[in-house]
Length: 374
Ligand SMILES: Cc1ncc(COP(=O)(O)O)c(C=O)c1O
Image (cartoon, protein in one colour):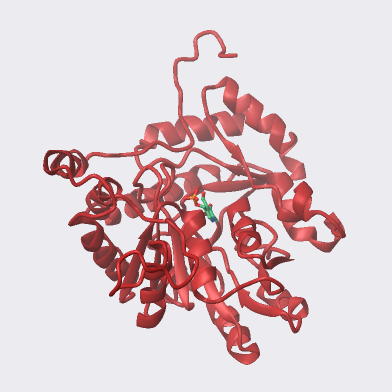
């Protein structure tokens, strides 16, 4: 229910389509190239891969199938285990299940909210084939630690960079460090195509295998000859047209996200009972979702604060449920096994984070938060 007199509505995320999106989409329609062939697809793949500092890009329909494609192309199969963070969006775990493998969850670390790399070794078994670090809410994982374990134990690394376009680990872009990086271009992401996704890699053979598998695994030389079971994960030219136009503006989007964070940090730093989103010295956080933790001494619970903000016209989101709390992944697990992820999930809120936010919007949100504190 909206409070009387409240006219403001500040969403968590709002797309900005202010560049060449309309022009390029019209080009698709006027030329009738609206399906999954057309000039925008290779151009978007090439330019997005370049933006990530990688050689190859393989476009797909969404970020979930980007993960599925990467897993399939790397040969992850029935009976394999894949290590991933407990605190992530459900797509990371589901993609592993769809490959026939078992997701093995690892607790979060306190500062970055990402996978605790010190706890990865204990989760490795003879069946472990890969690690999926997730760059949560735009902050990169500690990739040196992930890559060190992967090299020592001969494991593959699939970066889930769905939320971290342009984030950097020691100057390297998220998604460019492991064997493959997977992105989402869903409508609330930093770069959007409506639905959409991309796998990026420096491995030519892997990129060719992903192109092959995403297109029904059709033989390049023999049309309609399919030597194995593939998928239809193809992106359309219309999605790629929007993606290309968005890519032209991505530095502006990232700068806006980082500016949002700077303003939030300055206005919330003195509000008692809040922990603000970190940026480690080695990281460039792109603050996909500017997020805070509501601690006990704030005087109200996270859920109470969300309700009060809603009454002021401010939309928020709670953190994801950790995977071990979801019915299909809970068997044999309890909160005591994942104390950090469980606590973060109870305390975390994503605040409005659009690239369209004004300083005045952020001031309004921060005033509402400060007023709610007791
Ligand atoms: C961490 C993470 N992985 C994967 C996905 C899946 O992406 P999509 O929604 O495009 O399928 C998302 C986003 O929604 C995500 O946040």
